[in-house]
Length: 109
Image (cartoon, rainbow, N blue to C red; front, side):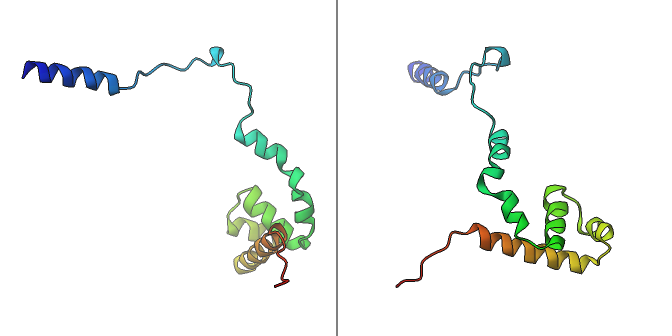
């Protein structure tokens, strides 16, 4: 029985990972963070062109709601519109962006 307990203890220690503290000074990795890569690629995929395809009101609503992360009520106040109007503009703008972003499929069947 003592032997079995000793074997169990040894196995438990082997399975337990060794935790090592992180030292930023010793980190030699040079890859950029996902955030900086995404921000760098924003215009590479024509984001500016996609936003330009929206009408002015839709573009303003999308920028205020998505980019600035403002609540609907505040966007409505800024634009002098009702909350329902802002919701409708946001919905139509997002649908238009989705339409633009999706690749065209050929219908030659």
